[in-house]
Length: 290
Ligand code: MF3
Ligand code: CO
Image 1 (cartoon, protein in one colour):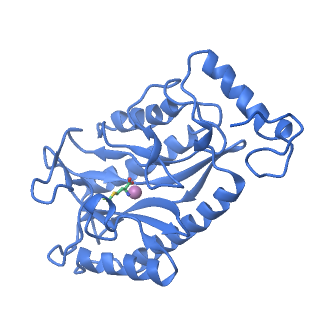
Image 2 (cartoon, rainbow, N blue to C red):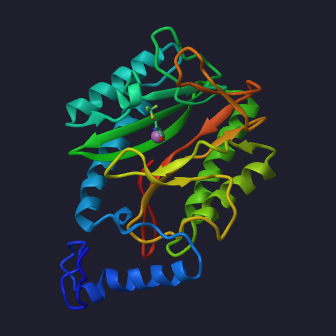
Image 3 (cartoon, rainbow, N blue to C red):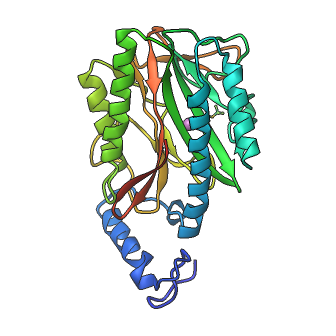
């Protein structure tokens, strides 16, 4: 990039002068870089215009999850969830991001009980009373990506399942609270993992969150088992997901050999996941879709 002068308009298109916009941010990043920290590339900082587009995508993503929430019930197949997601998204001008993503065959991921993530909808999988299911919805609108997932409890669920879902929700909230501007990515994973461990649970290690917005999966990788004060500096303008997978038993998993996608707990105990998509602002984290 050509050198910008202090009084030039900022590269981000805000209309403010560089010296009043990204120059102080870049100087602060340089300070941390010189102390040995990992700092994001400038292209991970979304511009105000990009943020507005991503926000619209995220609003549609939330509306899709709300549509699922209204209809999900015992006796329904996961294929029907796929149909709701697909039709709602397309009829509102969006594209389901999972469809054909690296060969993924459906428009949503539906992961039940011992499935950690990437459960594939099927007319043969019928929701029953007592199930817990993660529905992971990702949307492309006008070329901008959004992503969030919720847990749904089908009818009365066992006490252990209820506790797992509640603690997972607490883990995400604690992770969100730790997502402070000029803090570190590792603060988030530490907050999540500590709370999971305190409740006797484990957190999946090498599957995690990700930057998002201009692409489905961008840098950074977001670990949920990390150490405070480590990993990438959190800079205003970054957008990424907080989506820990919390297991009742071991953190170890298997991947379905036939479909190549579905991740299950190695001990077949329950797993829960909740995903928020978060923008780091100067004032703190802002949830774009959940
Ligand atoms: N939504 C998932 C995530 O949170 C990604 C799913 S990829 C798919 O990162 F192809 F399985 F849909
Ligand atoms: Co997702």
